[in-house]
Length: 63
Image 1 (spheres, one colour):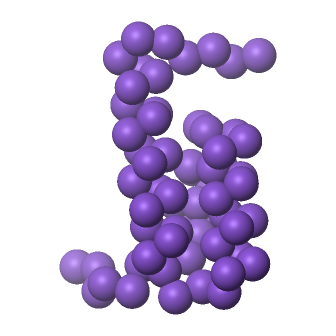
Image 2 (cartoon, helix red, strand yellow):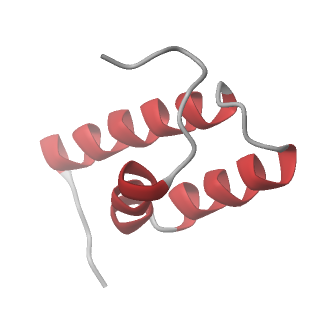
């Protein structure tokens, strides 16, 4: 099992929080928001990477 501690753990925690805030602010349906949030919470590193590549985008325009 992968265990991340110290500074790496803090960075992953911050990225996961950012991902969850972006998921909640997206225009996706409630069901999709719940599934993406669970993925990020249950698999913090892999879930974040999957969300970053394929997850719902926030309603704010990205530059």
